[in-house]
Length: 105
Figure (tube, rainbow, N blue to C red):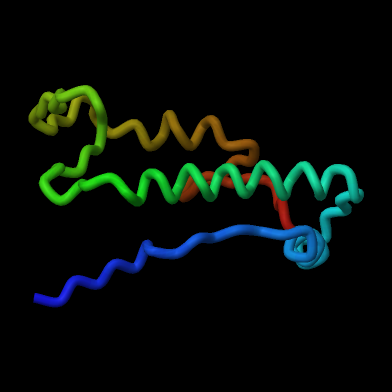
């Protein structure tokens, strides 16, 4: 059996990378803020590395921490043809469809 462990690396970020990312994203970052970002991002990467060490082989994925299921209901039509009432709300009068003002020029 071959085991491929892709998470055995140490990721870190330096000041040069921060400046490069800020240039690519066109966000101006001064020197003081860039140095703070280096420390913050490196601590985030360290935390991610700790999470990658967890053994999650026998853990089922969750969609929510609350173990609840949605109640299903039958689809029932509760109203009759409301087309005419809905078309009356259109900003412009039209019998076939809802007319709205042009947004994009």
